[in-house]
Each structure stands twice: as structure tokens, then as C-alpha cells.
Length: 200
Length: 254
Image: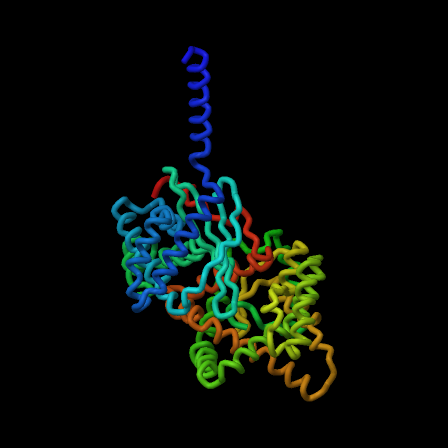
């Protein structure tokens, strides 16, 4: 191997590394689609398992923890109150939030027989990530479910938001949570205690 | 009526008064109100209490009774008819919005369900795969650039905005049933249309609306937020703009 080959090899590595660094934070439409397909098949398998819908919440919670950036999602749902929360409050809130979401979504499984979810396409939204468009045919009604997928800042594609028939989960929760906290005079601890019982 | 803005009838004098108010207030160009601004909140919350009471004592039990007593097949036909009679309004609004594709699909749906579907009793259009669209005059005004004005919760009619409330008069004018003769059958259909639609809707969204109204801490806020998000989605025909997506990495790591 002569000097020139070595140099061009080094250059190639450098360029590859540079491209790699550039794209490390961009999820491709294929990656996003694969993630959504994996999540929906896990959730459908869970729904089809025998047993009460409410008993499936712990498993749903772990599927969400693996595939969505639940900590940042929880922070976004807290809206303008996120900044003022202490480290300890944040930890307790995130735990209560994950339980709350798993509980309320598992509860909705009762209305749903595990129909196939069809992925219709995935669209690049630049810095906002990829939006995967899917639909499910439940009782003759076609319901649109869109998934926002982004890099979680460590190279892993993660679900950020779910938009069902135009309703964003984060936006809905943010409206509800911030109103609750405001009515509680900004008391985050009181809000966490209330969240632990909400929908239970 | 309640919660997703289905009722369309509004007295003309009332509509004119609201229309005048809208002109005076000089609506901004945003198609939905800013989520934070709710100038009529005092009135709205009072009306929400009224509406929730009406739901508890009348609409909810009525829709549950409807669910138990009426056979599945009949409920299915009623739902088909409820959606069928809206098609001319959707068609007219798609035309007004200059949306040729949706106008064509809605016309095709109306033609197929009028003929093969026996005047809307059955829904062969869905089986063939003709998409269903719901366009109203509020969406048309938004497409034309009219701002939403403030959020309003009307007694019995439920959530709306100034623009969408006024627009109900437009849909009344665009509805062919408004102009069809005086026969007893036509009169009966006109009378029954709105109440039947309300009960059918309350029945179909039963669990969801129960959760929203009775299982949330502040149902007023949840209904308002849900209505405004759904309206924006309807106006944009389900498309999502980048600005609509949340940015959970905007703040420092939580």
C-alpha cells in the first residue's frame, strides 16, 4: 500500500465520518416506518392476548418506554410548568405520567378488536422528524393515526407524538395539564398526586 | 349539536347579530384562535355547565336507550342516512373551496348511495372505496381567509367559533332540504334530521365523550382543545404542517 492510497483512504474515512456525523440526527423515512410497524405489531399482539384490558397497562408501558422518548414527551406535556419543576418532581412526574398514559390507552383497547393497522406512507418534516401516516379500519370507520418519529439525540429513532384524527396527544395533554396546574395555583406536587388517580 | 359542532340551524337574526359583531371585532388571519386566548371564557364555562347537565339528564341516557332498544341494522341505516343527507352540503362547500377532487368524490358518493344505496339507506360507496369528506361553510370561510374569531360554547349547540357559528346559516342556505316542497314526509325529515343526528353521534362517540366529559379534571378545557384541533384538521383536510408538530427537544433535557 503506497502513500497515495493511504491518503485517499484516510480522506475517504474522514468524508464518511463527516457525512455520518451530519446524518446521525436525521431519521430516515424507512427507519421511522420500521419503528411504527414494530410498535403497532407489538401493541396488536398485546390487545389480542386474553385478559382484561386494564391488566395490560404494565406491558403497554414497557412498549412505550422502549419506543418513545417518554421523558421528553412528559416534559412537553407539562408545557410552561416544565421549567420550574425540581429534579425530584420531574422524576416522580415522569413515572406518574407513564402510568397515566399506559392506563388510559389500555382502557381504550376494550373498544378495539385488534384490526390491522395499515401504514400508508412516511413524510420527511425536516427538523421536526418524520411523520408516518397510518390508518385502521374499526367498525367500518377509517381512523387516521399519524406518528411523529425523531432521533432522540443519541442516534435512536423514537416516537414523539401520536396524532389520531387530527388530535395530537401532546397538545391535548398540555392543554389539560397546564389548566389543572393553574387551578391548583401552580402546585406541581398536588398535580402529580392528582395525575396518579386520573383515569384510574 | 354537542361537542363536535353538528347542529347547523341558527336563526337568521341571531346570525346577523353575530356577523355584525365579527366585523366589528376585526378577526385576525389565523384560522383557529390562539389556544391561550379565550375572551368569552366566563360565558363559555357557564354554557358548558348547562350543556353537561343536559347531557347527564337527557342526551346520554337517551343515546344509551337508543343503543339498547334499536336493532343494530336499523342503527346502521340511520347512521348511513345521517351521513347521506350531509353530502349535498359537503359537495357545495367543496365547489366553493375550488376543491375539484373532493367535489367529484362527494358527487360520486352521493350518486352511488342515491341509486345502489336506496337513497342513502345503504353505503355501497364506502365498499367501492369512494372517500368520504365532510365540508361545511365554516371550513369554506376559513379557506377563503376568514379568521375564526373567539371560541364560543353555545347552549345546546356546543362548541364553535364566531366564524363557524355564523357559517351554520350558510350551510342552512346550501342544504337542498331547505328548498324542497311542503309535503308531510319532507317536513318530517327536516324536523327529525338534527335530533336524530345528535343522538346518533352521541351514541357512536359514547365512551369517548363519557371519558372527555366525566373522566377529565376540567372537561371545558378538554372539549375546547379537542374542538379547535379537530377544526384545524378539517380545514386543512387532514394535512399536518410542520409548525403543528410539537418540538419535544426545544427545551433543555427534562
